[in-house]
Image (cartoon, rainbow, N blue to C red; front, side, top):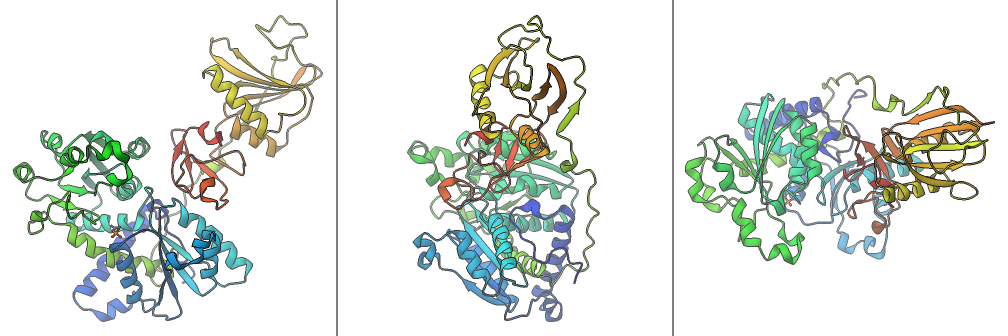
Length: 531
Ligand code: CP
């Protein structure tokens, strides 16, 4: 049991499970599904928690049928203690924070929470908070959290059951998938989870079929490409079927037009026309095509019309049933009942956290001259002090000035002597310069803060008219522990509008964006400093 890598974990986003872990998971789901459909009770029992004191709590702050009920039935399969918080009657409505609410429930022997909410990143925050609560109170466990859908962000358990359903079609092979995503790709969290989810397959081709108003947000498309997927976009099913390379697996979603305001609602019929499957399309698709849908489908305007229910294209009913098997296995894994025979992959070496992002360089002969001949414009040389140079190089002067104000504030240089300057380098590009006319050395913490707020800059420490130390800063792999940073997504748990006082945390992406660790929103480096 001690080696079970799943026990006590949380599933906030699909990437919380490695590819190897998911492949193991699907093997177990396959075993369980067989045991249930063949009434093999002995095998079924191997998957059960079988502990009436093991508390599993459902907290659905947003509507649900499939996720909530399949989890409830899966929890009952385990012969565990199953509870539900009716949030409309809870003290959340008296202004209690989510942290206080879930800490309270954690104290009553509840080991697992299944949470759906419009607040993005909520379960990640709660898993961190309740762990601290349990430690503070000497409780011998930390609860697992399962994200059952958070706003537009992710739906990782839907992703697991989608992948399992696709794998049933490929004979559990992981070598390739060609998937058409059709519908509301803008708001749909199930399709957003595909960005990391489909990494399960070695070769991935994704066709995005939606009118521009409902197309996949750029950051997800960007991430898909970073993940090595071949991505194509089409404005309608009609346009898609006018070319030859059509996927055998189609994944439809419900248009969530209610979230898009009057302007879009006025053209709702036109938008739907692009993403509803029509009878005339049947002859243009392969007879082995399978249609999937996370459901619910709208009774008046389904993207998969009901006349398709009795056809061989119907994969969505089996997909929905698979949710039950997948959720039984997931609960069993996080409870540590299964997973002992999983061999974790060896951890990767050379983590980005080892990267040097503050580099001390030779101050060389670049010491300011004791006359003004070396200066093209503006600044007099310093006897003693700090010069931060090359700030926001190449950007426009107003952007540079705005960001220099952030730097002054973050580094607490906005009081006392000194100033900022926008000049041009030898290459003619604009750059910012901050001058502090007092000598002092910066400690490691201050240097890290400098790199976090002024990446790409150069710090010169000047004493007796000589540059005695020079540092170049690069983008750090993580930015956190600053009051001045903020995620721009109003639905994020960290956003002040949610009043949960969650500190911000950003992770650098491969293309030097910064991803919010809670809601996954991509920001440019400067966007995170625009609190
Ligand atoms: N697929 C899905 O999440 O359905 P529910 O909203 O009914 O849970």
